[in-house]
Structure formats: structure tokens, C-alpha cells
Image (cartoon, rainbow, N blue to C red; front, side, top):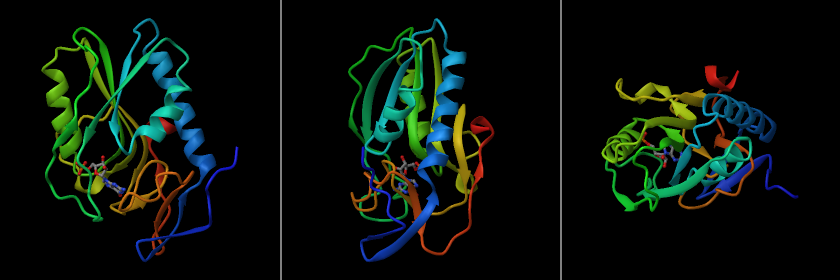
Amino acid sequence: MDHYKPEYVHCNGEQFRIYLTQEEIQECVRKLGQKITRDYAEKRPIFIGVLNGAFVFLADLMRHVTIPCEIDFLKLSSYGDEKVSSGQVTELKEIDAEIEGRHVILVEDIVDTGLSINFLIEKLKRSNPASLATVTLLHKTEKTRHDVKLDYVGFRIPSLFVLGYGLDFAQEGRNLAQIYILDKNPKPAAGEDAK
Ligand code: 5GP
């Protein structure tokens, strides 16, 4: 299969460069999948992906989970065409699955302030799941509220706007196989769960 992974990307008049390569991302997703497989043996978890951004990550993650599992999606409003959060969370699509008594794994592409994931945790808890865990590929640690519960983290990164592997800039760039940043920033460290 051909993948879209140029050295530089031009999007909305700005130049982005590679921050996390396809190999780094795939290795990290593989390890997260193996860890979830070990932690959820016999539990038949249901993954709830947050659209639109998490669909690429979840598609790869799920194929590294080698126990029976299910999937559903919900959708929140995005950053729109901006690079900073509006601070408002609006739900645009609800899940269809019945999650009462189920082992739920909420899957985000990226957590920044934690506002979105906290909103979703509170919402899902009201349906009385047997357990509720969170997974995020990227965690921008600097602005995260102290009460945010993240169980599986791929990469911990500084407050940089990132693009690619499901993440967009004004709806562009989701099909990039790698993760890109504006062309002027440093390299990331792997999160504990990805080691
Ligand atoms: P939070 O509510 O934690 O502040 O923001 C989480 C949501 O903001 C993510 O699900 C994602 O939609 C969006 N987001 C946060 N940082 C970035 C980023 O660097 N790039 C993109 N494309 N979206 C981001």
C-alpha cells in the first residue's frame, strides 16, 4: 500500500515538518495494543472512538488487540479552522451501543486541556459501565487539568499544534501517515506506556 508521507506538508499557507515518523507511531500503537490485550483478556472491551481525529489511530490500535472486542464512535465539535481550542465542547453524534455493565475504552487522538475527555468520561459514566479506561495517542501535558485520568498514553508532547495520522488542520491532513508540526520545533519523548 502507498502511504502519504512527504518530508514537508503545506497546509493553509503554513509549512509543517515531520515530528513522529510512521515507524515510531506504528511501534507505539503496537505496544499499546499488546498492553490492552493483556489487561483486557476475557473482558470483551468496547472501544469508543472520538471522531473525527481518532479514527486512524483506533483502526490501527484495534488490529493490535488480539482478543474479542467491539467498537463504536461518538463525535465532538473540533477546533474548527483554528490551531487553538475554543474551550467549548459540543457533542455532535452519540454512541449507539449499550454500554451498561461493559468494559469501555475511550479512545482519543490527542488530549490537550483535558476538557473534551473529561466531558466524555462524565457522560459515559452515567451509563454505568463495568469499567471505563482512556487511551490517547498524544498527550500535550502542559495545559492539562490535574483531574484528567489517562490510562494509556502513546507520546507525551509539548504544547505544539500537530497534524496528520487522523489529526487535521482545517479538515486537511488526516490522511498523512506521519505526525507533523509547524516547521520550527524540538523532538518528543515516548510516554511510559509506549516503552
Ligand atoms: P482538549 O479538550 O483536551 O483541550 O482538546 C482535545 C481535542 O482538541 C482533540 O480531540 C483534538 O480534536 C483537538 N486538538 C488538540 N490539540 C490538537 C492539535 O495539536 N492538532 C489538532 N489537529 N487537533 C488538536
